[in-house]
Image (cartoon, rainbow, N blue to C red; front, side, top):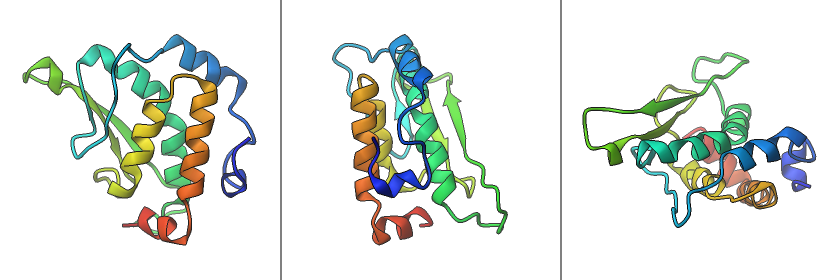
Length: 143
């Protein structure tokens, strides 16, 4: 069960199908994901497990963010990057509500969720996101 801070924004438990999604996209053995300025950068074949884990974070971030245009519905996105560069430079970037990069304050949350091995670990990581969401963290959402 998520901590009370998230309960106003998300269901009390992960949707039943979400555990199946995580199971279908297991983490690669020995890989530790990190989110930085370039998003998650890694070999392209290692991106699907990350993509499978970002939906709830993106939904929550959009829900808690102020839209720079004042719109009531906020949009975020995910960009899968692949280029002529070495295959290690492929990746996944989260596009924030302002159209820019994901707020630095949210990068550790993205990494924690990307590294959650199963539904139980994922729920625990979401609890960690919620615990970090004090007034200061909420102010950082709009930074």
